[in-house]
Image (cartoon, rainbow, N blue to C red; front, side, top):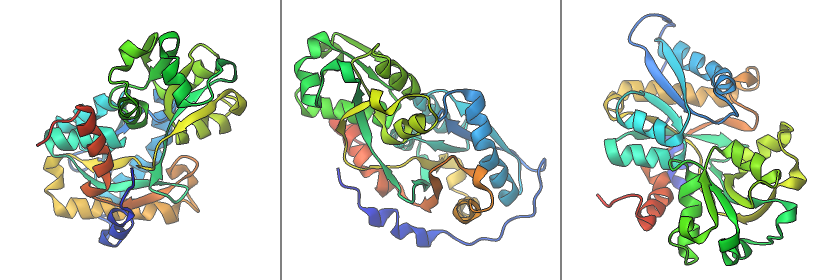
Length: 297
């Protein structure tokens, strides 16, 4: 799954250096900023992304209400329904919101300077599994965990992989299949409570760095091709306001340079945003169509 980098990196020039509106916290219609559950719990997630919400509010000159949404599927539906104005959400969630309600990406987040990440399948040392082929071959006696069904790396991409390997229905193939949060997948796999599970490299790395799991207890047995990072998207109604789009993009463009003096604006390893458009998320759309989880328009 090769991503045409020109659609995101080349798009950086489309950021419009619009001057910031005068700060007017408490004036104007609030913008509802939805964020997926990137951190282990809602409180920590809110604390982590509140500085970014404040930055957007200051640059846009209007209140920004931050809300963490527990599931990727829920955040996509909220954006599609117009209950959320701006969202930082996973690629599959964005594609779903785009397909169902015309939500539009305006930027992609950077991780260590890159707009891409990887889906992975992990196991633990005592599982005896050396590869994804082992997992599939021994499926009748193995347990497997997906993320929620709005997750790119936790559901869509590993499902697509299994289907390509002749496993059209993992729930029938494996002895036990469950759906849970990414952090819970790593925790249960490393504890030996699950044989294997789907995750993404950024989450695994963060949990190791934070001491939430031990690196030697989480073994990667499969990794996807590069996937486009999380999207900042606007609902269809707001996207029609091109002045607002330009101001959002300009505000996000400022974040990277500001991290030198305001590192709290983004979690560790996140290094800013780059403008992107719908074309950058084509690999996710293609996977959705191939699995039948997305219908042709």
